[in-house]
Figure 1 (cartoon, rainbow, N blue to C red):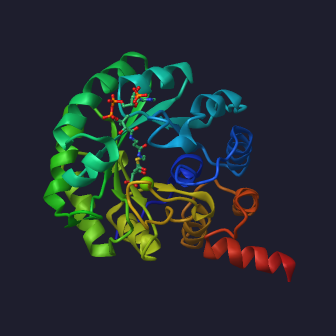
Figure 2 (cartoon, rainbow, N blue to C red):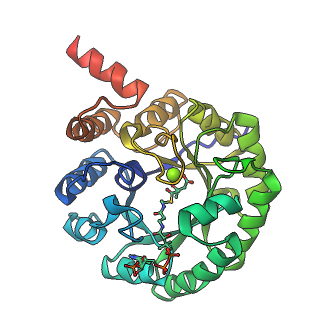
Length: 302
Ligand code: HMG
Ligand code: MG
């Protein structure tokens, strides 16, 4: 066991969490959510996607959100950029970090970004080069790293292949994503180990959707390998428009509770985080999808 003593969380709630909401969420609400998350101590926030507004209408106001935030110098604000057009928007928005997103499954790549894995890497290469020239950090995400809604199980060597391609174009950090939350701890460890062939442990993160309730177990399994970066979503918000039935990322509240209980630092104030989750859940008209948030909110009432 090689447990880290601290963990960095990227709250992807404003982006991954909200991208699939049917009813529009006004920019002002997204901005307030970002403010509450930074108030809770989150230092990395995934705020928007500069993708086609026809494909993902909920993310059409990314520039308004990015420019409306009262930014803090110690917080990193990231955005998704599938191509040069997205990158230009990220520059205008003064994003600190961009995320290029590929897939370990050919079928998902086609559905999600309308091109093959190889074509996606070709599209990302100039984006990564331009970001580096502009001094902007680059993260990569590899979707369907353990399973795909169209292809089923995904072998670890697919993850290694995409990791090698991403590393080859200069992507600095890679997220291993279980897009549809089908992974179980040992499968996730195999996917992480595949990525570790091309990315050092400090440059690797876990991004686990919780569709089958495995995300906390998968987080622990990754921690046991020494992984110390994770994407999580406040109130467990989310889903992917191209992965039918997939639910949100593991709730930030649940991960923070587990980590603090294990003596692992996050720098996050759990009570304020629960407030942030309650804020957005109230707006959406439902309860937070987080066991920890539910328990703590019940305790407050009691
Ligand atoms: P395409 O159709 O292949 O590309 O889309 P295109 O260049 O032919 O453009 C099509 C239309 O999109 C054109 O508009 C472009 O102007 C516009 P039209 O002429 O039809 O009016 N367009 C853009 N508009 C705004 N910003 C841009 C942009 N680029 C083109 N950057 C594209 C390719 C990637 C754009 C499209 O497939 C797309 O937007 N897909 C959405 C992908 C997406 O956002 N998926 C969800 C996020 S990924 C995710 O959630 C997974 C992750 O969480 C990890 C995990 O859990 O797995 C990261
Ligand atoms: Mg995701």
